[in-house]
Length: 207
Ligand code: PRP
Ligand code: URA
Image (cartoon, rainbow, N blue to C red):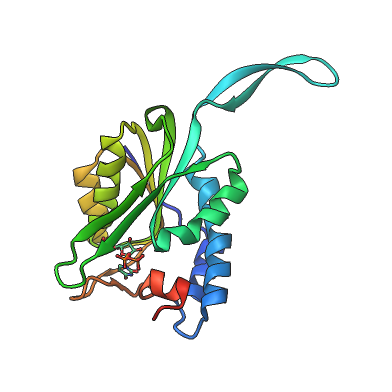
């Protein structure tokens, strides 16, 4: 499908605050909330609609509503930081959770938790995570929702590395990918450069 790099001035401005190593956890979270609303707007621009017959106070009309339920799937932990912003824009969205932790030596993700709403097969599923580094966590999360029937899948990440983007595109060519920005590369520890450090630790104050 397609990859969209948002490169939106408001996202870039707020991301600069998040990248700064002096930024404290509460300000980091506040900027992530604001960015999540902007990313939700961009990533939902092509969601399909269906007709709905309604009566306005003036007349009857054929109006539009979302064709499918929206299910957000944050990749724990850091993906949780995007849920509030997305749900502000899409309050009817249901939320599934998937726990993935990277083994910091092998860089391979391990799934430790999964709980989803029913009927993923007829929902627009938006997997959200601030970071797309090697792509391992996102690839496994996509496989996990596909194994439960999901067909209409988007991956939304704030900061991506070219290595992770290529890996997801190759493994799941049917998934639309949205990145707030594309950074330079991964370092030898699998961190995105320049990046913003460990998103989960900075969000939850566990550095
Ligand atoms: C981070 C991040 C992604 C993953 C990206 O999570 O939130 O899920 O790493 O890396 P990858 O693309 O190389 O898989 P982490 O495993 O550090 O867990 P945390 O969110 O609980 O801190
Ligand atoms: N996970 C993070 O939180 N940050 C990175 O730079 C890479 C993976």
